[in-house]
Length: 287
Image (cartoon, rainbow, N blue to C red; front, side, top):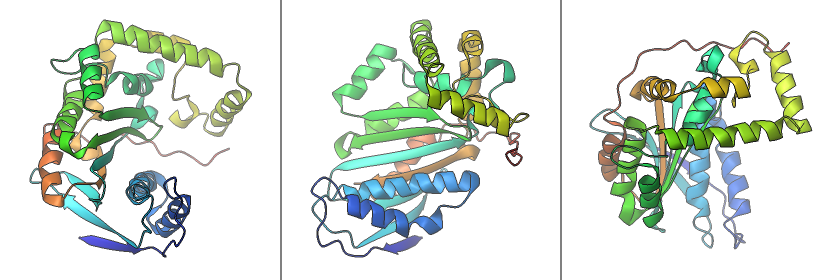
C-alpha cells in the first residue's frame, strides 16, 4: 500500500540539506502525528521521511510515497524509497520503555540502551564497535518513558552486515562486566551533573508532582542507588521481555526496495520472540 504525500515545490532549496524542505514535510505529515504511543511512532516515521527528502540537498522535493511492507515472517515496516544516495536509515521501537522499570531498579531501560551495542554474540565490546566503525555503520539505542528506540544508518553495500549486527545486538547482547561498569559510571556521572542543573531539577520536580503515583513521575535515568543495584541478570531479563515482535514498529528510508527490505526485516527481527501482552499503565491527568 502506498500513501502519496505531495509536497509543494521548493525553488530555492537550502545547500545544507533543506531547512525549507524539512519544515514543509513536517507540516505535510502532521495528520500522521496523533497522540500517545501511536503518535510517537508516527512522528518517528515522519523523521525518517524528512531524512530521505533532505538527503537530496540540491533537488526540490515533489512527492514522497510511504509503502507498507510486510515480510514473509510477518514483520511490518513503513518504507520511503530514495535511490539517489546509497544510504539506508532505519528507525525501530519496542513499546514499553522506562515506565516498566521495576520500582527498585529505576534506570534499567536507560542503562540497557547504553549497553546493547557494547558486545553481542561472538563479538565483545571492542570487536563489535570496531566492526561498526570499519563499515561506517551507525547503530544507536535510547529509551524514553514509552518506548525503547533503535536507529540504524548504513551504506547500501554494507546493509546485510548492518542488519546482522542489529540482530545480534537485540537477540544476543553480552552484557559483559567491563562495559556494564563503564556505562554505569557514565550514567552516574550524568546524574551528578543533572543534580546541579536547574532545568533538570525543575523537570524532575514537575514530573514527580504531576504524576506522583505513576511511573511517569520517576526519572528515566534512575538515581544513584537504583542504578547501582542493576546487574547483568537484570539487563538480560529486560532484553528478553522488551525485544518482542508484538511490541515492534519499524520505519525505513533510503536506497532499498520493498522486496529486499522484507528479507532484511526477517534477518534482523524474525528471530525475536512474539512476546506476551504487558501492563501499560495509563497516566492520569497532571495534577
